[in-house]
Length: 295
Image 1 (cartoon, rainbow, N blue to C red):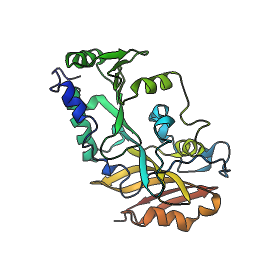
Image 2: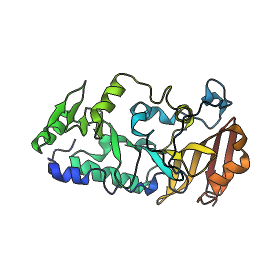
Image 3: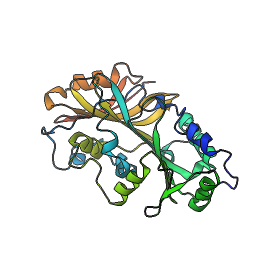
Image 4: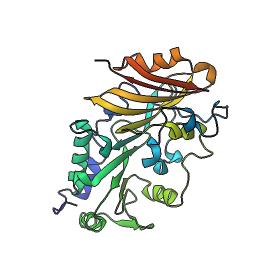
């Protein structure tokens, strides 16, 4: 934790909060968003889908417990694409890469008076619209000093669930988590109670979270822009500015008949900076494809 006291007032932080975060990097050039259906159809996969795909991983492990269905399932917009969640693991970012994400972290850390390195992972909670996301930060924080700073800046303690102190119902602080969300208390309560995100609520989201591989950045996107796709996830390994140049996309189709190699490549390659397919897997109504921009 920085020794200096934050240079913001309560009003200044609220005005700053969530603004100008540069969300174009999220699924840029490859993952988009906006429809989030729950479907009872058979996925055509075994009981443990992760075993069925070579490309599958545990990319959602670092943030899955903090995902709230109540904040995303009512956000569907037909004909549009919408990013629901964005997760950045700063420990996975190669040296010298993803400068925009690092700058984003430094800006927010400076505003609340902590060192950027104390933020190890960051989850933007959706639906993410305009430039006003909500966020959960994971790392190692001097909670006592941060709580004192909030109180000195005019924030009011509204509850203290478990190890958290919540201010103005909008900021929750503990030694390893900082939450900025208008329903912070609900997020803390649901996670503390061990609720399984989307279990029994949204089959496609469960399936997607079971499959997305680990990487520096992950986006979860609802797809209302295509009739045959419910949602997708994009794990980004390399960015050139705001453009994803190497990644793995996981696609959940409406049914298995739509999940063809031609359709998968059309979605992944057309209009994307990536033009080389490294690996492609299709089973049932789920497809995973790794692609990159050729040299």
